[in-house]
Image 1 (cartoon, one colour):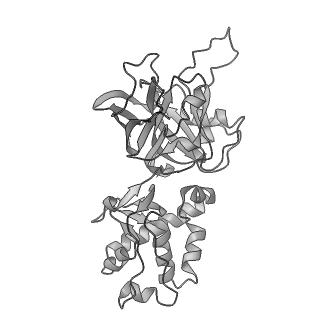
Image 2 (cartoon, rainbow, N blue to C red; image 1 turned 60 degrees about the horizontal axis):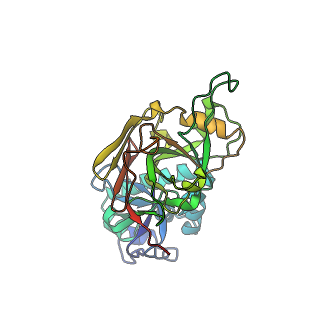
Length: 346
């Protein structure tokens, strides 16, 4: 599934008239309106007439439960498929199964004669009537691997080289089509297109061979950094410096995250073109390494930047600046686009 977090532009209530869906929801007090601006968990319809539309998973499941004559369908839907991604991930495989049920029900209903009522109920929205947010609005932790990790030979260290890690503040996260705001006094800001793996279950001291089993899904990321700041983690943690999106693709749809194409475009110029297999450390290796000393929780994000990007360069050809547009596209994960502005002094 392609999971999204989105905001509506208008409210919806279940239609209270005679007809298939109206009759189906008789027997419980009508569903609460979904308010404009409220953030919801959705999935992208991939087939049929409504391909590209978004299913409100919680609302679709509530309607299905009403069809099935389940008491308090909204309460039951909230417990099975919460409306926010972090709560959803913390429920684990049971929530994913319920979400697939809600998506399948929506696709089936859209192909039936009662589709108009289903649409009026706000269970499905066209993409142009919603605003996509970051799939995960506030991760627990964001951990990445720095490119500034020289090869270590046996004379300096026993054993193989290990990833050099950095932390990125969860408050830096923004979504697709939002603005990356460069601090007014920053002169050297760069970025790397990165593969983001979202952890789905508590992970401690996991082996490399088992590490990908702990991943809930993947998305494109833009790892922005100010080199004006000496501390690397601080330089990567400025507000808006962690764009994620446009959606979270569940792990079952990405059998081999170690071989995905990565393409980054800066204001029309291709500045990064590589594959994740060229990364010095794979997602599995990074997760295994981190989990030796840090417990990973559902909703934590692991960033693995692909090589040959701007940030990876010792001295980029140019720094990003006000007015730039950055697009990070990863094979099977979609395109993440953001705009660059400069914050006003003071």
